[in-house]
Amino acid sequence: MSWWNLLLLAVGVGMDAMTAAVAVGLSIGEKRATDLMKISFWFALAHAVMPLVGWLTVGSVAAALETVSGWIIFVVLLFLGICRIREAFRKPEETPSGHLLLTALTTGLDAMSVGVTMALSPPTGLLAHPTGGFLGCAVTAAVTFVMCLLGTGLGTRLGARFGRPALLIGGGLLIILSLRALLSVM
Image (cartoon, rainbow, N blue to C red; front, side):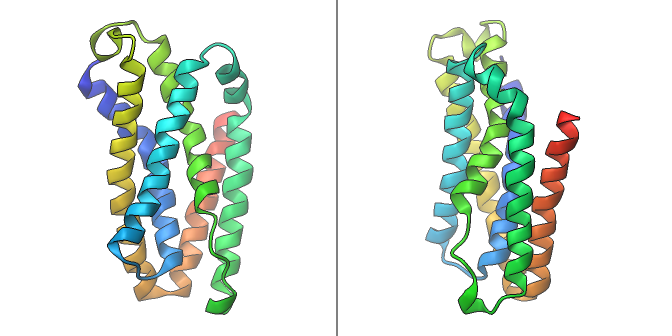
């Protein structure tokens, strides 16, 4: 696999995480740069670990998880989207702290297929070395981190400016992601 192919794969997988990061940003209002880095870190960590799981367990656990991952993603993102919409109608002091880790792991399930793809790719280019999967996971995590940093930053600006409608949009984005996952399994 070439650098170019790996970057395209990482960007493709990072799009769900970026969309979810925008939704998270919409619900948190204005935050400091360190908060945005922490949020992006969790998404990047999930996008490093899940492809690694796919790469290391190709053919056994990954195949079993891949058959149900679309359903898991659908249920969890639908739940999180509904929670975001409910948050829009609560008083600020009633809003729960969030579901960041769950959101990151759910979007990371999609990234497991990257690890499976890396393991099943012909051992050429970057993946020819025995540690090529680790490099692929690191690239996926780095690309996801940057995309989520941008997405969360955009979300916080929009959330601070538009408030409740922004939360409704964030919940809607998560529900759209869940429906996309559902369509992938049907």
